[in-house]
Image (spheres, rainbow, N blue to C red):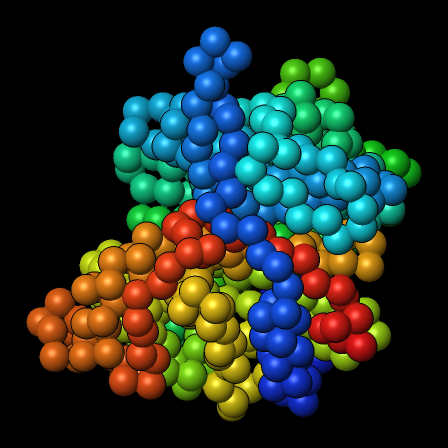
Length: 397
């Protein structure tokens, strides 16, 4: 087992944060994003188009000619929950951004899950899948191990760990059981030297969010136990999870008053640091439309202490500035960036009222609403998933 600080501290510097944020902002602004990405999850007799919500990209092959993607949808979910799907697309050229009509569903990974995240186990063909298991008694994080991409496509996993919801909170020496844990991302996988066994003893670092009076950032670590041969195993599992203090403080110093949730990890190819691109609400307004309008993307350099995160000042030609649920995946020389676009920016009356959020009773805190004015967004942007690609060299040089 490794300690949190071994993987979460990063390089301990803030030097690259502002420049990397500026590079990322410029690269995305100059790209050609695809909005409102949809896929047919029906049958030839009864097609059914749904949006690929909270899409996360994964290389579909070793040659960089295909993409895999996890997404969730209420369609196909059990007992009122989301269903988590795996889809694939073929690329016409490196950096190609496949839009609606070019994605095909492969399998349903779970009928009660959302927020899927895939990670290759270094030095092997094995793939780890993390997701948020949805239940009526509270959501929790699940980790699954697959032998390779083919097994992932068949949803033939070797072992599933359902992680407990105990988190050591701010200023606490003891873990407390939380009602909901979710939006997992796999920060690191360090394989054990075990002679080719299935990820036995892999040290896995995770980021996630959990709920108290608002959504807070957390991080945790575990040692993945051996997977037995034969039938897939399911096991409840205790792990080390805690409040991500430095990440939280950086978001609060950047005037994020509300929820802090999903994040993408961007690792410099030249050793210049590791970064987390977070979603954060600038208004403490929860699920109200003020809250949904206030989602912004903020970049944090792992290990940075004492400085605010850098907000990305993205503003597309369509006036869209509201983005959530970022993911980023490197495929060859390209980085695929995805985000979720809420529907609220396309209601002009709601968007126009956001700048005066502090004057509304349902917005209890909003120290930066006036600094984040909005007008109604329009085409070509649209609600649902957004996907684009940028060259890695644009981000890190």
